[in-house]
Amino acid sequence: MIPEKMMMLGKKSNSIRALFEYGKKRKAEIGEENVYDFSIGNPSIPAPAKVNETLIRMLNEKDSVALHGYTSNAGDTAVRSAIASNIKKRFGFDTDANHIYMTCGAASSLRISLNAIIMPGDEVILLAPYFAEYTVFAEDAGATCVIVSCTEGSFALDMKKLEEAITPKTKAIIINSPNNPSGVVLSENDIRQLSELLMRKQQEYSSDIFIISDEPYRELVYGGVSVPYIPCFYDNTIICYSYSKSLSLPGERIGYIMVSPRAKDDADVFFAVCGSGRALGYICAPSIFQYLVAECDGMTSDISVYDTNRKLAYDALNEIGYTTASPDGAFYLFIKTLEADSMAFCEKAKGYEILLVPGDDFGYPGWCRLSYCVTTDMIHRSIPAFKKLYDSYR
Image 1 (cartoon, rainbow, N blue to C red):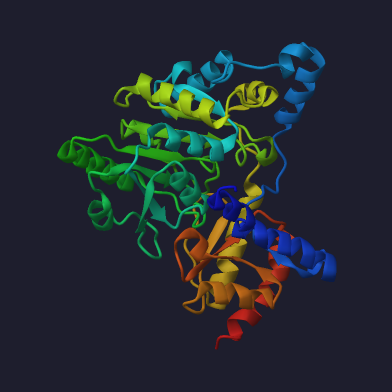
Image 2: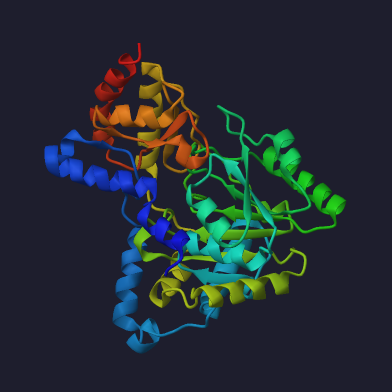
């Protein structure tokens, strides 16, 4: 016998991936130019030139045994020191190598962090809309997920709902800003209010409540929008970062965890992260990419194409008559579906060869996600199909 839970997770593919696979099949059937695939958030712009230059130089100049060998379990100390130094430079926040753990991207960062802090009976608050895998990570760590919906339309935090959701069992709240799927960036005012609420609740319940900040899209912001650095506002914070989107390196699986030095018992929390990584088998992230990000940390691919696509998709769909959230970051557009059943709407969209992800997968029915990290030409070509889809509901 094998655990049914794991078997079912394996059988039931992530719906985004399933739609992506459907898209590949459909393109083979009718031609790639005839399918408008907005399903997956796969960066469509190249990595900064320095990434390839650094890789080539390291391969040519570094000792190959050292380059491809094991690092310390938590990651190379010099790499972690470089990242800590950049955090201080960019955000004015003091940290060091002893608070940074190198990981295989944000997914493993989240899984390790949750496993490090969750005790039996603990609850984790998820802010809907949220990345679909959060429930998988939190529940597998032993937590009960408590869903709190953000304000529809603006997708700002609903402080009243949040206060009602926090109990003595609350151990963490996962923040994702810029948000997948809405593209919304939480304001400094929202972060300040949330921090004050959590500090008040910690005191009321004599407990520790963590903010786990999932930050793969931190650098993908537009129009001068600023993303508040949460450890500057709230002490019990764990940062889960990935270079997948900032450096266009999703397949290389490289990121880190930063435990705030201001967190209560910060050294113990970091040791728990190290122990969690060990127990889950997530030790010694890919060494060559550790050395790479030490030199490229803080850089960003040319996101001007995303900005062009963002404006094009947002303006075109709103002109047709769709209602959309205003995306200040990431590369997603969240669209209110033209019927209450967003899964039925996305199925109907398939009839026009438009591939969209239903909001149900993000804990927010009645909406759907469009990923605009695609060619600008494809967005242009899709607009008549969106118009036909809209007209079919009139």
